[in-house]
Length: 86
Image (tube, helix red, strand yellow):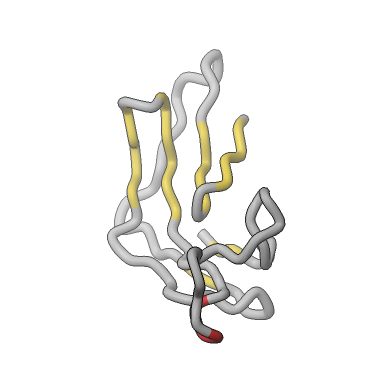
């Protein structure tokens, strides 16, 4: 999974690491989750990118593929607190 672009500010237009982040902490700590439901996290990345630079690509290498078999219910891909549903 390659994350190529993400917002420099959160949904409130504030820095990700609050309160009172230092200069290097204003960038987000980037993580990845694939969720079937709030109680069913299919994949939770064991690693994350601390203070991820929005100008760089960030690669999460999955040890096993995520297989989606039930397309009738939504799945959620979550990056650093942002949710993208399908």
